[in-house]
Image (cartoon, rainbow over the protein chains, first blue to last red):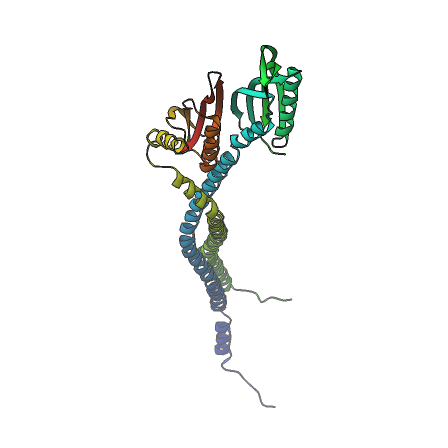
Length: 201
Length: 187
């Protein structure tokens, strides 16, 4: 068997040692890790760019929309004010008291045995109206005639207004007789107060 | 496991490598990934806020256009009401208007005097005022006056008759003494 003598042993050991140099291996590992880190950083940068682009887009959209929103807000406020004003005016207009129908009722409800001499009426609140009728009633029982007139007027008005109350402020026999259809009849002077609530039934 | 015994030089090199790793990791997170994450967090927060604002703005725009649409009828009514109110001072046009109105209906010489003005407290009517007027009729036929008053209250929706007083006189049974108080809603 031939004898093998490795004369380069020392040289080869140095090569191996150089290959296993911790600093060299460390630098290599560092480079690999740095490359991986850089790759991850690039990926994150792209994601970050997407977020930033999205933000830029939204900022542009917001710049347009914010003006529109401010205008819309003003429009909304103005519209609400107009609607409120119109509603208030409509309420005032619709809540007015119309005197025509009341006078029609008074004309229709006043018979020949009643002569009205005075009317005084007023709107006391948006819901309430009062009026006073003064006059002369004629008949065999003029007080009863006046009472029937008060009652019939109250019933007539009740068809138009939700609440109607009435009372005699005065009812007195008159010394002077009244003439009705050529006949002289006893007379009474009266004053009747009415109070109406305007909400219709 | 038998680890090869490291020389002093090798140990130093390993320590140096570890230090370089530490510096790399520190620098990477501190100067690259950290600021990026910080910037992303701020951007994500801003995006969320902007999305919320944009959504609210879109809602506002939608509500605004809805409000304008729904207020069209109210705007038309308000224009109509504005059209009924002359621009001149009420004292200049209202008394002649009322006098002429009654004159045309056979009740001449009606006098109208301003009693006062009052601000309207109803919502949305800050610009409006109630003008109160005393209206005196000469001795006139009650039926003619009441018929004209009825027409007036139907023709002018801004006018309200607050009080009416009718007094008959035994000396002149055909004519009555009549007075009234009007209120008109004006700007």
